[in-house]
Length: 224
Image (cartoon, rainbow, N blue to C red; front, side, top):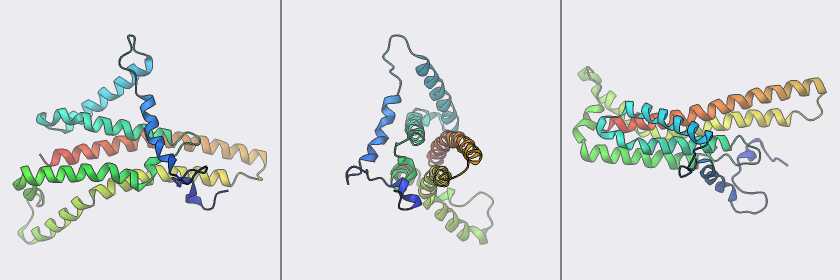
């Protein structure tokens, strides 16, 4: 029985006290196409087209010297996309709805970008704190605002992904919990609403993985 509304996001398994549900993050490896097949399947061709399009999008955001780093962001996009889709399946734990998961992705990336920028491009990082054309009286305030906005970047990345994935699941859970004892006509309307929400969640799963990867790419391009 569900103790509260957020218990559907409990990472502990119902069979044991161990958090075995986190192992669902590795299920995405089963969906990676087998590139060593002699004849590629339609799924392989479709996935290669998606990866090629995402690679071209990320490559346009980076400098020519950074174009080889797109493999990091395409891998990040694939990992988040697989986990978002797996969270829509029945009885599969949604790992991307937890801050512990999303912060583990955004915080190391942000720290590596900051270390690289401040060590190798110190003057550029200082100049980036003051936008061009800022009046002299506003420069201290702009430095403070830019510093705060830079510090909260990993948090906003993590919260954006986890909140969007959690919101749709909460709506589906609310509709499901209110379905007991309803007449058949209202129940059919409720099922239709859940189907529409599931379609919306599918779109959100794709959009949020793309947004997370694109913002990470933009943060990477700023330090070089």
